[in-house]
Image (cartoon, rainbow, N blue to C red; front, side):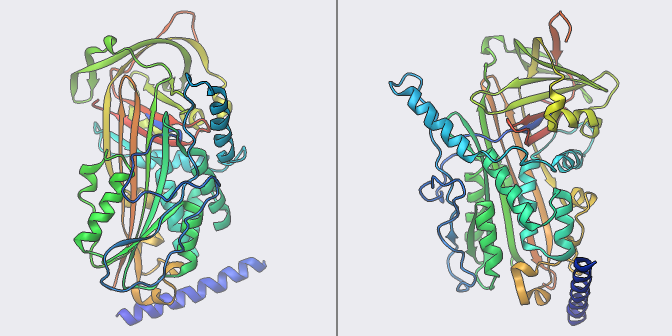
Amino acid sequence: MKSNNRNARAARRHSRGIIATSALLALALLTGCGANLPAAENASPSPDTNPEATPEATPETSLASGSAPKAISLAAYPEAVPYPDQDAPDAQEQYELWESSLSALRPEEGFADGLENYWQASLSALLEGEAGKNRACSPVNVYMALAMLAECAAGESREQILSLLGAEDIESLRAQASALWRACYRDDGTVTDVLASSLWLRDDLPYEEAALQALAEHYYASAYSGSMGSEEYNELFRKWLNDNTGNLLSDQISDLSFDASTLLALATTVYFQASWEDAFPAENTAPDTFHALSGDLTHDFMHQGYFGEYYEGDGFRAVTKQLGNGGGKMWFFLPDEGVSVDALPENAQLSSLLYAPDAQENAIRTQIELSLPKFDVSAQTDLSSPLKKLGITDVFSPERADFSPVFGEMEDELLPYLSDALHGVRVLVEEDGVTAAAYTVLMLRNAAFMPDEPIDFTLDRPFLFAITSEDNIPLFAGIVHQP
């Protein structure tokens, strides 16, 4: 049976190649990239001032079986210039250096064009869930994981991913992923927004060097090798995830591990931390009532009056609160009475506000009296069902998956397929600011083996949140049923 499977796959590969040749002839969202990344034991080498910096080491493609797990290449990030000390004698000079470093990283205007469909579709799919349960996701984190998966895939397996991500070809995807990474990158002591990536290899298999090098070069991906299923390798994997998420998701990560059938794993993370431009006065925080679906709850609410942006849409109202030092902003969407918060992710007007800067020009600038519950929302999602609904299906099938770019001639013998697609998120909102983290892990296994009056905006019932960057990149989003 295994031989027949290999022959069938080989025949389909040949057929797909002929077809391809013939074709050539004929509602709370967090978008914003910036934060202070906790130091990691396996940290990057000394930062490179070149924003296009790539790992200094070339990934090895074949390693001795049974060797201790190790890093075989580490991503070198661009130099992070600290935010200036306002009291320093050379504060102006420091500011110019800091601003210059951000400008050097910033991609060209329009770099995110074509991503609107992905942002909207992913938000809707990733925030589906049981009524009354908190949900959260990081669209940009899932994007980076899928982009890396596309590098490992070919044929229809790759095309399905490219279609979802809005890329015409792999070269376009590489350029867009690199631009997103650079647009998000901040690690200057005031704002942290770092996207980290890694690939995890077996020490007893050869891999195609071109694919590994592409992952390192275009996605700032570090590479590790070890014995799949060994506790030592699993501990190194979990440590990398914890180091790159600020230990915010350690409970979820403690359950993650490889087994002996794991052929390769891809992992992406995002760690975000930013202070409010104007913090909520702690003395104003007081208990109040939150009207959850399951019944009223008493919870601490933060209160603040400020002059800001207010929006009214079909079925919802919204306000924004600015994060300091260019860290982006946080959106709060309150459904109208009688409208379910679970319907908001599919609301076209809401999506337009988040992803289309022109729509934001319709904001009403007015005095806002914001009452916001402090919240700590976490969620863990199996991405298999959402991704299939979004059109990514072939990679989940041992008979249809095509991972030849990374496994080469071994692919038809190994029958690799995407067995696990896991996504974890946590978002904390307090008086001082916002801290959030997310991870996505993809594992391949061996199948054979405004008015004049102030706006009273009290989020005392389920609501949707989102945080967006200065470039309207969605980093996090969620639905709060119970703060």
